[in-house]
Image (cartoon, rainbow, N blue to C red; front, top):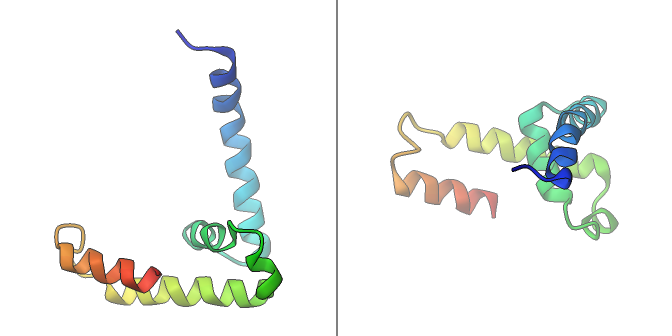
Length: 89
């Protein structure tokens, strides 16, 4: 059986996704880029160190580097995934 809190959370999810998409559009970021931007800005203290423009630039550079390092079977090769993890760190 579903409980009320679960149902509220599920029904709120589409609105949260729409809000995130709007925020990404306002920053000029795609949904994929917005996911990385959110990860970069998750600790609020990071916004005390970097400007929003710097965070957007870092997001775009990271996405660009990850796209360049992708190989055809990157999901099957541990070495390719390890390289991508190093890049993100």
